[in-house]
Length: 180
Image 1 (tube, helix red, strand yellow):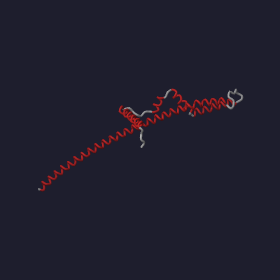
Image 2: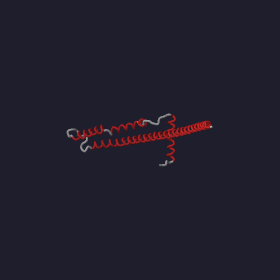
Image 3: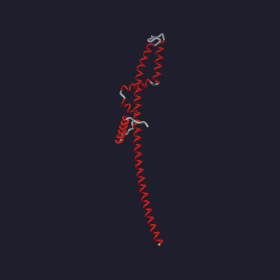
Image 4: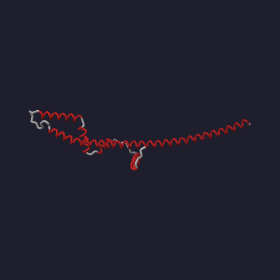
């Protein structure tokens, strides 16, 4: 079994105390992590998540491919005024700028997803710990009930033995009366 450090033991006891306090007050420990996570996001976080969702979609990829094809076709036809001739240096610059902006935004979104996963893991741990505490309490109640029933059974058996003894005495007395 893994031994916990002093700091981890204190953190665990504090968490157990927190869970028991919530239970005493009648508060539910279960909550929707998605809602909790959304409440913690600021405007920049929401914008970054939306951009990452959009940039990672097939719609974006399809539209982007169409724009690239149109750009190359328009700049390849000599009849039109060419604003970015082959080898499309301006296009490369635009693509590099888009990649330079998209990469950190996507990384920020991934960091938030990681934070959400961590929040979910903490919540799962709290729920599991609460379930463990409740199971321990149920075991204690069952042990108490079993002990009480065992005592009642012993008392009932003792009364039955006493009743049998008294019946045996009566029968013995009656048997002596009939034999004499």
